[in-house]
Length: 139
Image (cartoon, rainbow, N blue to C red; front, side):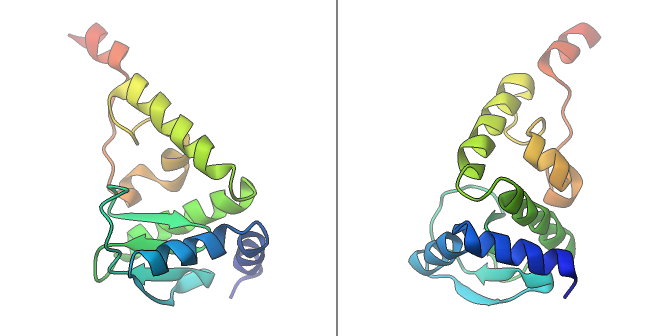
C-alpha cells in the first residue's frame, strides 16, 4: 500500500473515526472486508439513513448494496482522506454545514457541497446543478 494511504489509515484510527465507522457497520449489520488502499468495505448496511448509495466514516465505506463500482470506491476513498484532514469528528458538522449550503445554493445536497465536489461529483453519481440565481438569470 502506498505511503499516503498508510498515513490516512493511521490518522483515521488515531482520530477515532475508523473505530466509529466500524461500530456503525456492526450496528447496521454490515459484513466487512478489506478494500483497496486501506479502506474497509461494509456491505449490506441495514439502516435507511443516510440516503446515499454509500457513505464513509474514517476508512470504513458503508453501503446497503452487495458491491460498489471502482469509481464510487475512489470517490468514497477521497472522503476517507477528508476525514483524516478534518481530524475525525469535526468532519461531521463541517459536512452537514456544507450540505446545507449546497441545498440553499442549488436545491441539491451535493451539487455545491465542497466535500462532494472535492471527492468528484461524477464519481459519486451526483448531478451538476447551477446555482439558483443563475437559473433565474438564464430564464
